[in-house]
Image (cartoon, one colour):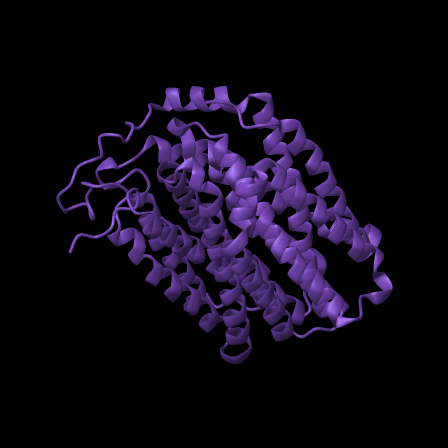
Length: 421
C-alpha cells in the first residue's frame, strides 16, 4: 500500500497538521494550566507563578536560531522539515519522561522551571519545523483553513491535557500527570514517521528515495542571513513584528493572572479551574476547526487580526470595570470562554498574516522570527504580572491587557499588506 504524500493530498495534509499541533498543545495544557493551578492551590504567589511561566516560555523566544538551523541544515531526501519534526518530538517525549521521573514538588520552583524550560526547548524546535513545513506545502488559498485546523488542534490538545493532567495531579500525583501527555505525543509521532512531504522521498533514512526536484537546496549561511536581513528590515515587517509582540504581551498577562485570580481571588479549587480552562479550550479548538480559518479568509487576514484585537480589548476592559461582579462564577466563566474563542481567531489570523510575509527560501527562519516576537511578548507580559498587580491590582492587569490590544491594532494597521517577495 502506498502511503499518502502530504503535498498531493489536501485532507491528509490538514489531518497531519492538525495532529502535530494537537501534540504541540499537550505540554502547554500541563505547563500553562494544570501546573500553575496546582502551584496556586499550594500557596504560590502571583509573582512566583508569573516568574515560572515567564521562565518556561523563554525557549520560544529562541525560535529565530531554530529557524536558521532548519533552513541551513537539512536532509532533503526525507523532506525539508520531517527529520526535524521527528527528532524534536522524540526529544520532547524524553524530556517529559525525565520530568516525570524527577517528580518536582510545589516548593521546588527552580526544578519545575528548569524541567518546563527543557520541555519547551524541544517543543519550540517542533513548532518551527511544523510551521516551516506548512509554509512549504500549503497553498496560499488554503492557509486560513490550514491555520484554523492547526490552531484548533493545538487548543484541543491544551484542553484535553489541562483536564486530564489536572485530574491526574489531584488523584495520582505529579509523575502520572506528566506520563499521560508524553504517551499522547508519542502516538502522534506516527504521522511524521510514515507520511512523506513529497513524492519519491525516503520514509526513513535507510529506505529508498531521493529529494524532490522542486525542493530548493539549503542556502549557505551568508545567503540565509543576508536574505533574512533584507526582508526583515522592511518597515512593514518591523511593524508587524512589533504588533505581534504587543498583542501577545496582553495574552501573557492574562495567562499568568487567571490561575491566581481564580484560585486565590475567587475561591475556585484546582480541578474546577482546570475543567473550566479545558472546556474553554475545547470550545476554542472546535471554533478554530469549524469557523476561524473561514472567517480569517473571508475578512482578510489583516482585517481579522484587527477585529479580534478590538473585541479582546473590549473583553479585558469590561472585566477591569466589573470588579463588584467578580464573585459571580458565571462572569469569570463567560470571560474565560469568550477569550478562548477570540484568541483562536487572533492566533489563526496572525499566523496566516505572518506566513504571507515570508520569503520561501528562508521561510522557517523568517516565520520563526515573527513567532519569536509572539513568544517573547507572551513571556514579557507574564513576567510583568507581579509588578502590575502589585501596583494596580487585578483590575489593573485586565486594563493593561486591554491597552496592549489597542496599541497592537495601531501597529498592525500601520504594517499594511504583506510585502511582495
